[in-house]
Length: 305
Ligand code: GLU
Image (cartoon, rainbow, N blue to C red; front, side, top):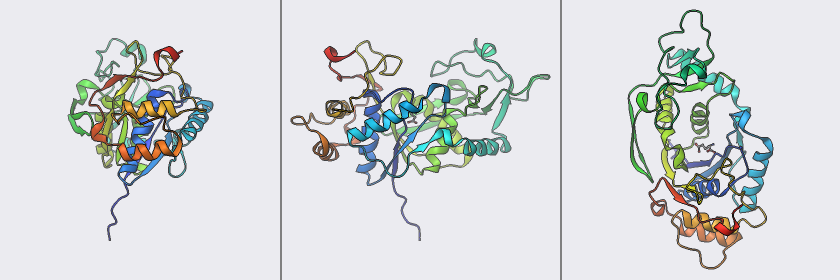
């Protein structure tokens, strides 16, 4: 008998800093959507890019999520413990002829035209074999063709992969496996069928679908939420000094995140289980604004640091 698969969603923060309003929006949207579908909601720490991540930030994120009343299912997956699994998948891609070694240095690629995310598109010098006398520094994924998908928030999307992204790195010259490889392997291994995350990642989705197809993995449904902008119009991030969510009183930030996601303004100062009961009743993915970015209204300008 074929049992219906349990819906699975996830929140996958990178511990490059504590949780801020922008990441709280992704946590809240992904959690409410998974629960609305009667599914499981998983937490994954995406620290595959070790030089940018810190264990103390991962610990802070867990504390902040707990203070907010988020309750994830099962153990937290941690990417830095999974390099053996990524190595296995890279070997499979090599065996399939989908991955190839690359000798190019950053300096050699600096002049290449930029793709859709502003990074240089690989011009293909090593695509048909390493030039004589050069040795492999990185491994790349061979991409071809166009990828389309229907985003549940942003609508139909389309990307000409070789032009917009090119042959992306799978294993970096400085050691770490690439985010694109780790995220595809982890989503598949965790049975994630709905990915709800910030629209700053929408440009990566076609690459991830291509990789899923190369590996014969199912493609989840995608829903890209608007990204929160600060008063200067920049994405909230560690680089723009976004204020951490206050673990002593996270409720104003959670109420603001709910409003940001298109939910009606909560009556009064809902907190604790009252907030969560209200949020589960009022959440709908159809109510999320169909924008790639929106100004954040939290914290109020006078309170920002
Ligand atoms: N780790 C990524 C971030 O914190 C999110 C990746 C994803 O949701 O696919 O921006």
